[in-house]
Length: 441
Image 1: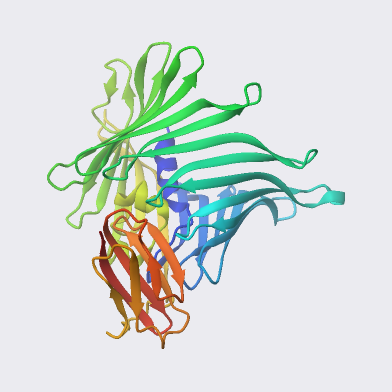
Image 2 (image 1 turned 30 degrees about the horizontal axis):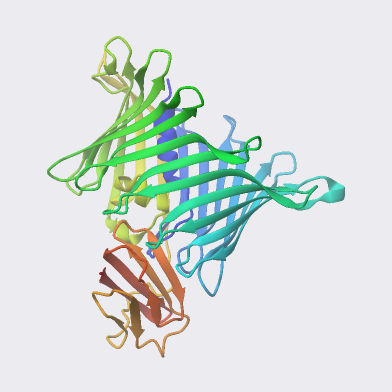
């Protein structure tokens, strides 16, 4: 039996478009079926000079080694602001062995903090007489004073009336002290009553160290109200604050109880890397997880490159940051037979990297004339000494590695709306780079 959930869980880390300055860029990912060593999936990535992912290609192969399916995503960034401006999705046509456009997203408006306000979605019309992009939907977003998204409204375009029709709305609620998200509510538009009605929501619970403990998904029933649907539970090592398990559950309404789907247990090496991932299945007889794992993943790392040296995307940093403490090279997945205490090779996941000289990341630091002040800062962050720099760019990251701001050729940045806390500021230019930690008051 294949460890499908485990495989999908690991594949998630290969997607996303967020980027980070680095010398080692993940450029290829493969999933191989063992022991016959058949390539099942391959993903290719390429980046621009700033480390932004500009293309990802995903191939699925048949047992004979032919391309069975494929998807390509290209991203374009604005040269002046660094903001994402366009994303195009293509599907692979096996008959012609060419890429066919299917979907396009255009980011048409941003606020002063670099947050997208309007996003237009187009679908490609393949009818020969009308081929081209057809406007399909629009997303409009709003943010609070801390720069956190609070609403995202989706509308469909009506070609007959040439008007926008409401479709759905996402609403976000945050903890007033930590600014951590505690609820995400999805509502759909009701044409009968001309209003949004509840559809689904996610709630989030954290421990005192702001680690996510519980993510609960609920669906709305007009008669019964909110009904449990799915949840994810995490546990942590109290001494090292590292995640040690992640369990997924489905709710069975007819039995009014939770049933386990998959549980992952993590074991670390001396370099704080996850060296072993144990996969557990649910035992219906005892209504608990089986004592022995059904699958075991053994990870291999190159400790010469830490997280700061890698181009990693947003899902690494937010959803599964614990997988890439150092450069992850391989995960060997084995099925485990508790009866015989033997393992059988099942899958091998390989991650390949290419050394890249991202703009300004050569081993030369900018001189002391380039200064960032004041620190701590409350409203305006000043950058001094940039007169002799060529096409420099300034990035602001939170302490989880998420890019918060991105500016080009400016010497003043308004950080008034950022939540209080610590941030990393990076100045990148052809002449070199500079990194500094700041405190937002």
